[in-house]
Length: 118
Image 1 (cartoon, rainbow, N blue to C red):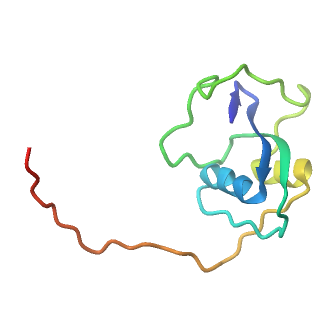
Image 2: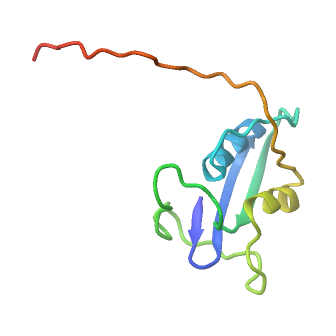
């Protein structure tokens, strides 16, 4: 993902499966994203979107340019970047839906620190 000062972000992959796209969307959206498209191929995609309202679970977003590569130009300087959900729908033709699904979860209910020799 590349951040564009005052314009939002660009997320691109070439090629990526729908599962990989779902994994990339999970971080900024702040929760798990499940692929239910049924698509099994690999695709090239580029998303331009606003960072407003996105979640950064590991702290604040990195400064522009910190994620590598030159700053890409946005699709249009005249229009503000859409939300990530809108970008996914308009630019990829996919829809994000909020649903309750079964989720595999590992729970650690007890831990002991064992001494180790130096």
